[in-house]
Amino acid sequence: MSYRQRSRGLRLGVDVEAATLFSNLGADNAYWVARRRAEEASDEDLAKDWSRVAAAIARKSKPSLFAAMFH
Image 1 (cartoon, rainbow, N blue to C red):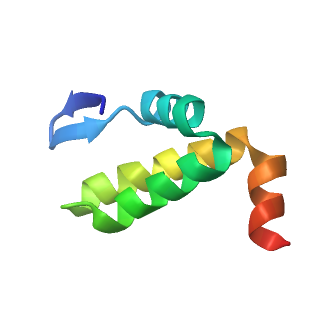
Image 2: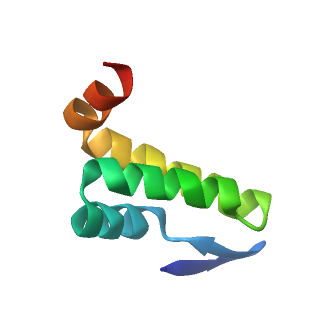
């Protein structure tokens, strides 16, 4: 995982995580892994970061992911 330092502690590097998951797992699996990590996160800030990762993956893969989710 890539992290960056902020005044409130460590935070995910959202774009880096999204790109890494996307390239390693493909769009659909990457999205669901990020969603699961958001649900299992140890604090609210980390959960928000993982939700942002999932959203970034969804934006990159609109046709395949949204087709699978809504059909």
